[in-house]
Amino acid sequence: MARTRHVIAVDVGGTETKAALVTGTPTGVRPVKQQRRPTRHGGDAVVEDVTALVDELRSASEHPVDAIGVVVPGIVDDATGTGVYSANLGWRNYPFRSRLEASTNLPTAFGHDVRAAALAELRQGGAQGLLNAVIMPIGTGIAAALVLDGRVSTAPGEIGHVDVGHGDPCGCGQTGCVEARASSAAIARRYTQRTGRPVKGAADVARLLDSGDTDAAAVWGEAVDALAKGILLLAALLGPEAVVLGGGLALAGPLLTDPLGGRLDELTTFQRRPELRPAALGDEAGCLGAALLAIDMLEDR
Amino acid sequence: MARTRHVIAVDVGGTETKAALVTGTPTGVRPVKQQRRPTRHGGDAVVEDVTALVDELRSASEHPVDAIGVVVPGIVDDATGTGVYSANLGWRNYPFRSRLEASTNLPTAFGHDVRAAALAELRQGGAQGLLNAVIMPIGTGIAAALVLDGRVSTAPGEIGHVDVGHGDPCGCGQTGCVEARASSAAIARRYTQRTGRPVKGAADVARLLDSGDTDAAAVWGEAVDALAKGILLLAALLGPEAVVLGGGLALAGPLLTDPLGGRLDELTTFQRRPELRPAALGDEAGCLGAALLAIDMLEDR
Image 1: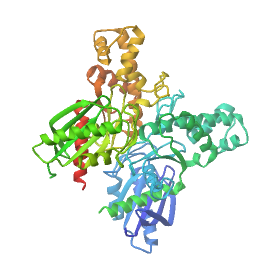
Image 2: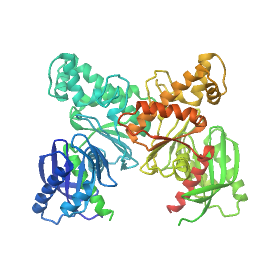
Image 3: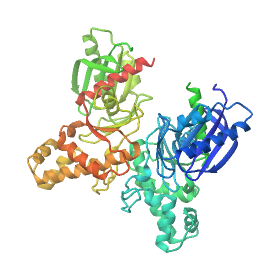
């Protein structure tokens, strides 16, 4: 039986940084105390703010803190503890792990936000018990973390930027990307383009859909079609038992999963049709995953 | 340092079954003596023929035989040692491993032919040293074995049956499949459809291409385009360092890799453009991989 550990977990997000004092083992963790603050731009500022959050939570802890786990967005090299690239947050090849170990004097696990969130969903959330799964947060963009043979792969999982044939241009320079029709941002933008009526986000479009708005139904249907075709590719290549849907769009619940499941039923031929499951941990998943990375690191020593 | 093992490896192919007495360690094996015979239809017939091949090679061995490794096509469940489904060879949920252990009285490793071939390419062939790679044999069909984080994944890797948008129907029931334009069989069939001139296979089309035949160039170009789009999907989702091309079509060498590399250069935006490498082990890869499965099993005991 693994020892109970006390760690501090930090999820550096695009706009907000979440930190938590977390207690648990590799099979399950729970937050004891939480802190948030806006994310500043640049590697040095992030290290400074993470260090301050760690100091605050550490002084609030009843137990000695064993380690910290920190996750960031963008391209991450887990092995070397490097933030390879973040366009939004403004770093390139920034040595987060070594800087954080120096500034906090604590053993530091460092990883990728989406993959860490997937680890938490796998150990104690919507993907529990699955050997092969895709964990897909759908928000401003669409990402995917791939669980293969029971482990969260380091694969990029850029399902938002595969060409599913609809022909619309995407910010990435390609056409036909899943994200160009099915991200929350795309759904809101396309509804406004079609109707001239502003909406705050995909949740507004979901409400309009539910009230019988035919423009909302058209935009939503095209989003569902793009998502289904993306999931079909994943099914052919990876054969996941389930796709675990997270992020803002997944809050639409059956408004999303009913038509998406139906479209998958229509499209599937030889592929295993993956189950659709909701993510369970919401926006805490990244922080809990960061804690699990720290605890796994301690176990491996 | 791992012990040198002596195993018998059998690769049950669609038309021919290859068997070899193999010597080596997990990092490298070599065939000592080989046998071939036509493959018969059905699980029972295959077990009977594999047992006969094992008996022949066993009596020819100077060393006691430690184990056997057997690989088959179709859908395979490695964990339970089951041939889940083969349309060509006519079995469904056939318990190969337990039947072979009973008939040969030898510890038996059982696996999938394409994944086993990939294991051999990874340990001692064209994929040596790679952590993330796709090994893609192109012949009558197009398969892919995925190497992720240094291990051959059990993922189905059905890159032949992803939709890359050309719209042509495929035998699998979908349209736009890579295989419908880029398999050796499709290249030969489409050349004949276009010209009315029969060809024996894709090698004939490659020769016509090389001699300036414009119909061959058109068919070849469409094959290259479909392959490049399939590889682009793999790059977005999995980020392989290299795609290792095998099977009959890869024998075309630069006639294939030069235009394929060029098309990938054109299509790649954010993805890491994978290197293209030739497979190194030819049609021995499956047998060598089966031997490695047997040796790995012995090491794990």
